[in-house]
Length: 428
Image 1: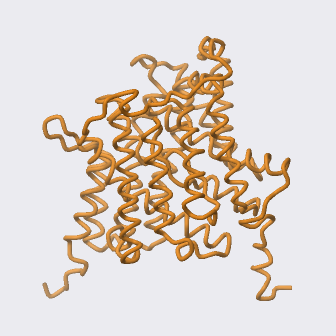
Image 2: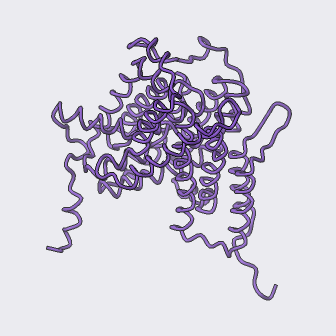
Image 3: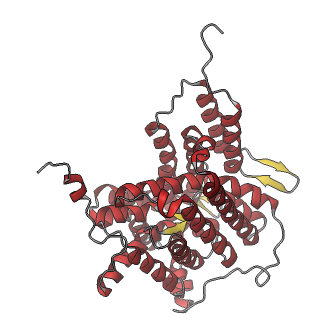
């Protein structure tokens, strides 16, 4: 029984990449993917101050664009990217959504440029520019730099400490940990969504939820589109361009990791066919479109890869169906109003876990890649980048500001390029 073919048999898909499910099954499987990404995707616009409806729409449109560009060969779902939260929050406070839009479009253009380079010269140079000692600490910074925001959401009511707020946050955290630890099957993939729902109900019991907006909202409502020249007059926001584009190199490594996981999962070589240039082009165009309609940058989602792993349903038709459902859901006004009525301590409680998980992903990269911190170069990069990033050090020249995450990313890349690789010998 334990023959060489056992592993292949165990990974045999229920539905392979180009297999189409029956209509009722198709709807259920696509809805499952939508729920898997929903909690995390809508959390990004809530934290930044964008319309969740437009983020859901961007997610669905981005997924369909990615499927088209990759020739329907990769079952990848795209959702709102967490990597840009700090930069987007700063831009929202200073210049509003037009700056975020320009940053999102710039991120997409960087993806397209890298895709062109990959097409011309291959992808080996990416590993040299972004080794684990750069990517790991930067991802840790992305998570830990948000810790203060999570604590503020959890404790503060109009800038005053509120014990009731903190109780709701801790209870939300507790139930989310419970779901993440003890749920099995599909429910184990959506602890964030389950935590938000449970936290919301807890907040209702504590009297923290205002339903007036939900009651007043229509069932059908156009998402809050932000079109350049129609909704606003675009101009150059250098703080947005320089603040968000360096982080694109971090999300590229996540993208590359997701493609590699999908390779293993589906027994394909997506880096060869359709190629990394196509997958990056898909991500880049999706972020550009999101910037033109009012959404945040999008990227491939680990939650949906988890759904693929458990269900063994790899069908791109299911992924495409989820994208279509996301677009439909974005026009349900009461759903957007319900999401916006979620109290801040619920978000704070979820964020305690979520932002910590992001940081731990950076640590995991360093552990799995056996990064040697006895190596002076590695130690210097990790130490400097983490203190700059977590400490909130930013570069400001006049009106231009480079956020701590972007600044620490640039510092990490520069240090990796200029510091010598060898350890000094004992004779020296």
